[in-house]
Length: 398
Image (cartoon, rainbow, N blue to C red; front, side):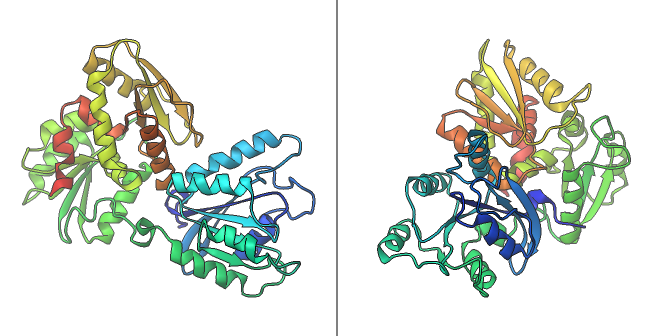
């Protein structure tokens, strides 16, 4: 089974037109994944390639259009290029012997703002060497610099990977657990998985599958039940489980069945920690209390999907918010990787992010914080509205 794209290291390739981005990436991947041409603007959209890059592991490269693209549709291409920044874990900026100017410097500032590590690859050394003055200008921004030639440097792949390994984010080197660090080998964990309209026929949803695998890796025993069988399941166990994890939609029912002495949380809250910043989401939920009539709330989803009749984002959470606050709120929805204009919102509620990577969620949290707008996520806000958030997060404080 291939590694999920959302769990891969995302590496963005940036630079001006014709500095050799596509040639460089083709050399690194060993495949012609990008069109190579001397014509400016050949790469017209973001091209993605997932692969195993030893010794780094599973990665996804995102090859972007030239940031100084002056061809037709250039504005749309550059816009897509810049939006990719919120999805990447590491940035690779290509230039050549001409050095850098405002284009690259603006990227450096953006990467620093979002705390994205970056390297500079100075390409085309076979044509002309970069001057000492221009090289010094680059080194002022980063010491992660590779001088090479995608055309004839036989060691280019080794040099790139060696530099990349030194830049790996800590949470990629030491992959965070979903639940395995909260329990011990030999523990029994009960997973409550409703089989309803949200569940694909013949399957269970991705966060639930990943949680089961994490428990297997931790040598725990998983007891998977529907909420209708939960009470009987607890009675069947000789000893109380170390933890109960429920789908957020069954939170209220499950909390009434599971004794207070047994830790309880949800898949969405586990993924709030895995994919984002749980503390930020908990703080963001407090903003529910200050919502007033007419306030705009944004429900933000990472992927697009067909909304069902009782959709959690479009139906259940809005109903919970209105019941909790008693206010006439303006609740709006946005789906996809792009980040909308958030200036007029009083609260942002993010999905569980099962289909996107941690960097994108952290970038969204950072953008929300910069704008002074509270942000939370599905599981956290549901448990908050139900009055069980303290119990749902108590397992993380042990």
